[in-house]
Figure 1 (cartoon, rainbow, N blue to C red):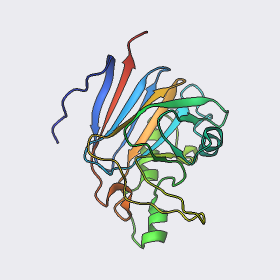
Figure 2 (figure 1 turned 90 degrees about the horizontal axis):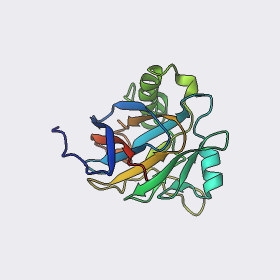
Figure 3 (figure 1 turned 60 degrees about the horizontal axis):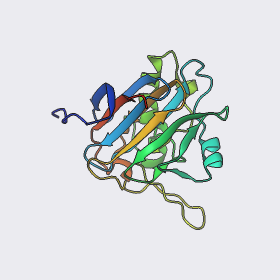
Length: 212
């Protein structure tokens, strides 16, 4: 697809890339830098992980993020916490208001069990590919954030992956609270409604705000 028009931002754009459907992406972010993740066509889930760039043994922790934040989902004002109790990213802008913390990433194996298909493109393999560029691997994958994925919880504790609520052009913007390695998989899932059954491209803009 043609590259979208430039986004007007009050600072320096460091990277502006369209990530194709089903593909991974990663970058080291300095403290204070921001990532804007844009859902170009709507209903596209983005699986996301982050690590302390100087000590990747410290990484995103879903349980602590939920406990400290007091919610099962993320929205503007939420922070992503590490397993050392440190804030890694803060959500500073959000046009959707619900991002999943409990569904984790799809894998070839879970797709086989749930949907009787084999093999399939999946987010865990995407994470392995992108993490390998930074000296990390499968053992470093933990429960991840799913931006734009809608996982409602029922009164009896039942959960389901429902069709995403994001529309074309919706975005979430996160600010690095420490030097971090940020990686994502633009989810290739076709067998549940996470990406509307039709994975589509996203846009990733990394930028640095002007000093106050």
